[in-house]
Length: 554
Image (cartoon, rainbow, N blue to C red; front, side, top):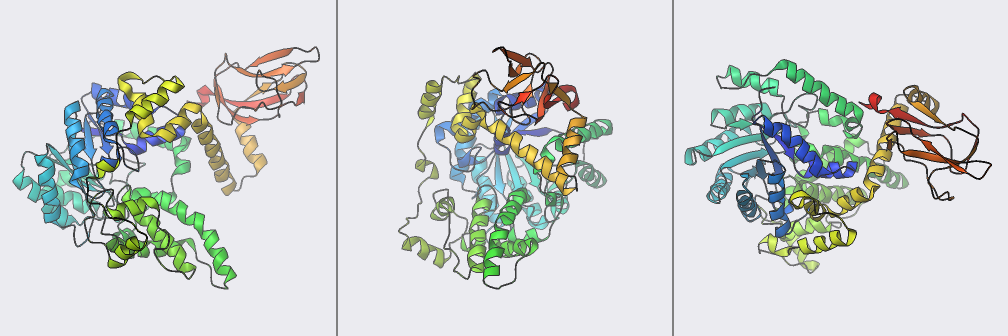
């Protein structure tokens, strides 16, 4: 397209999605960064500071290894943030990045509160630049930063540090981002984060075409966009969404909402939040019905949760609502809503991770805790911490090396497989065992079937449509079906979505002569339907399953 100086290629969400899909994130990162590196586009990734690429703290030796791995995989820039803006969690990553030869971009998590002033953020920027950060990102993850304040903050940093690159990252959720982009550019910002259709707008970034038009008209030097390439990339992205991603995107992600201004929640967590609310709605309504009280609609619950987040946030010390602290605050608020609807008190259910945030184990809160929260902690015998959060999480690489050695797993080029296990241990084990792939394929099939049912298709309609673009695999002779070479009653058929290549064995047929004949798949594709059970008796020509050809998938 000719308009991007850098492209995000890696981070916590990227890697965990790969693992949950049952694929190797290391292969994905190397594959994605190479063509960008080859044409001189810088690649950048997100680092959650103390939490690395996950939702909870990471030992220092694993954080350090991450930078060696990511540099070797072709990542140029790391955007380092701490949800609490605690420099103790950011500065070690600046050091690790510099040692590995990467560019450390230190982020300020932007929010709107009485304590998050221009002076507050400028002071943090001074410390991060002094620690070696050549770039500062204004990470307006919820899009609630006010344009005027963001402009003043940009100017304050640029006036004092004219050599430092400033990049603005603002989401569209509450609708302020276009005004914020114009303000930061007028005050010296160098790079603006944008998205492109069909993912832009809604809870994501403004679209690059709109941003380009606005800045070009205002007299800024902005690159031209190759529209032929833009339309091709747009089409490829839509194909990816239609293939499977779209089944997991909440439709409200495409909407903006001024309600986000009050609660300050980032748009990126709206999908998980809506899933939480849908999950508790039926239980809440059953409870209300038993008390002869009116039921609550989903929209009512959304407003109640937003109001409760707005209520609890200052009492919890104004942590910027970004991963993972947005989840912690939302979780506390959700539990409060449920307790209040039951007629009980607030604060009776707080999860351990939220307590770690409250007690200072994740870093220093920007504001003061409410007296009632302090008293609640004391009543439970909890102690507040002021020590460096990293001290709470000792080195752990040796234990993960031992696990890999015991399993006979290779550490991988540049120790990248060791890093994946150490960073995402549970997801990595599921990936290696194949459990993740099967789980994902099953979830995808259920999501597709649910979508078809929502459109009014019957189960028989869905089956016919699947078969219309599939090839049958038939029994070559009369006999009994066995799915695995063990020929036991416990053998299981292939999972829906499982891929086969021509030379692979599909199943075996036990004949009346006591032989077991191998049935090959004969072509590349994936299973969309299995028609017979283990041990079933079939005649020659009976359909065993339907498989979708690889050329159709492509």
